[in-house]
Amino acid sequence: MRLPEAEGLLADLASRMRAEVGPETGLVGIHTGGVWVAQRLHGLLGSTVPMGTIDIAFYRDDFARRGLKPDVRPSALPFDVNGRDIVLVDDVLYTGRTVRAALNMLFDYGRPGRVRLAALVDRGGRQLPICPDFVGGFLTVPNEHAMLLLRRTDSGSLELAMEEDVGGAA
Amino acid sequence: MRLPEAEGLLADLASRMRAEVGPETGLVGIHTGGVWVAQRLHGLLGSTVPMGTIDIAFYRDDFARRGLKPDVRPSALPFDVNGRDIVLVDDVLYTGRTVRAALNMLFDYGRPGRVRLAALVDRGGRQLPICPDFVGGFLTVPNEHAMLLLRRTDSGSLELAMEEDVGGAA
Image (cartoon, rainbow over all chains, first blue to last red):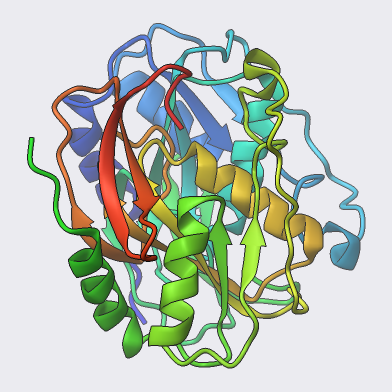
């Protein structure tokens, strides 16, 4: 199947966020693809707060089943979470389990005033009552074992790719 | 302001759930009002799985600020959570913080296959990216400090009431 252009989705996502997300809002990208999207949004939306990143490898609800990932990256929230307006940024929204884990990680840092969710692509298939506030686009993936993911090319542009899922859905 | 009839909302909620929620789905009511709603739904939907209850008093993100509530009720999930299709039931959906706490409590018991959310009333004002799958009705409450709550009369019927909020929004 033909995948949509990630760069076009990113432009659409930014335009939907522009009127609703102020420069003081903290953008927090979820590793890895969400960080790339958040980096781009940070510039497109003129954010004045440094961007945060979150790695949910240790917080996943199937952590025990999957074992320790050798490439765990550190989380970094370079602002006070307490009372802050935050937008979590993910690349592909699917079951919602990753977002639940990211929310818990955020709340370990403090008590945000509000947390909204932005995703470059919503592929449906939610298993938790989690919903995005901002979406670049929707994509129906006929094969539930297909893993939709974001890649970054050598030139820095983003593109969507489809792979066979080998480790369970996120 | 005139509040809608809780019994009418309950009938609407049940009719929306009927085609989507099977008899094997585990209903889990959130104390206190959500338990009353779940009890009624359990009968209306012909559930064959015993109903669960959850008390999130210890899990609230403002627990330290509010201190220990003297009336903490036990949680009881009389079924195996692992892999199960579950519907969390709340009375009034507001910021979403209660639901986040209830989800964490559920996941302490196991890894559900899917969790959906039913609420008798959605009053808006979400502070987390949480959304209901089933709603009895929507209600715009002009005063954000007003607390909308569910009561049970001596005859067992449900009714909505509005009170001044004294302890912060749930």
